[in-house]
Length: 228
Length: 211
Image 1 (cartoon, rainbow over the protein chains, first blue to last red):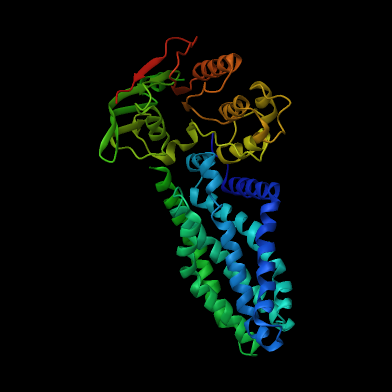
Image 2 (cartoon, rainbow over the protein chains, first blue to last red; image 1 turned 180 degrees about the vertical axis):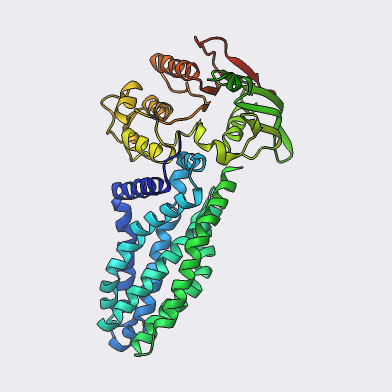
């Protein structure tokens, strides 16, 4: 009698959360529509002037994606806490941090990947030069998982508090500043024809650190939330 | 089951208690649970039955006193796969079917040898509802879908918080039957209930909770 291997447990978690996300695919569409609508508002507010829009395009896409992700973030553990699934995860003979890591991965796939997929469209709406779009996508591919991981820790810390959505935004947005600076810096450098690899490398380093530490912090925070 | 197995209690509590904001939730408890035994945790509302079970499961920290597992001080890593907890919240995903919920539980905890989800769901009285999302089931059927875990997962100690809630007469008989088979096979169970429980497999041990 032995518990299933880690690979089986990880696959089970990932499959479970992706199935759940697919059954509620209307929820996935919401942040995508939000991001598209916010992006369309900028030319209306600032005027359809090419040079101005080009200059702000990278930053606008980044911040819009960030805010859209924030909309879906506080639901990450809420339903699992409500229906008792989290208790079962905590009590399973598997490392909780790993299971939560899989949950965060599934959440990133369900919320951030669709946003990254429409990012080229958003960038094109703001006249970002086509040559810069791959750099923008690379920056998003590194910055969004970082936000998911940081966000997951904060969601775990605020688990069980009422009106956690607003609190979460107030706590997460300041933490996002470095990620936004490096991601926007890479896009701006690419736009001016300068080397853009250094800020991307910083993002990658931060992501590597977060991948290791965030699930551990999440696990500790959720154990404390249940032990009350 | 060897003689040594029966001599050493599966689970033993010594002066176990729990404080919430420095107020003791229940008076210090001493009890032993051997393999093949069933213990009924009795007490009024608010006497700490659920708290005790959550503490034994490992969701709450042990306030004071000691817990021993097979004679050794209890370490969660050693016994996590042998303890199965079923609480008020059933731990079912409403968007998944009973079959998918069982698959998740089996993927994390493992399954008994030679037991399949289809047979378990038929045995628990959910034939025909295997692929219906749990949100469309009645409260009693949801309870049955959660109880199906007892049949599928390989656990020695069952911690059941109000397993009879929401169940009809047949469901209550089913739970009693599950408990009887489990204890006959060398398992042990701790069950809380306000109501009278008629258990046919011998006299259960009683653990009385006092606030």
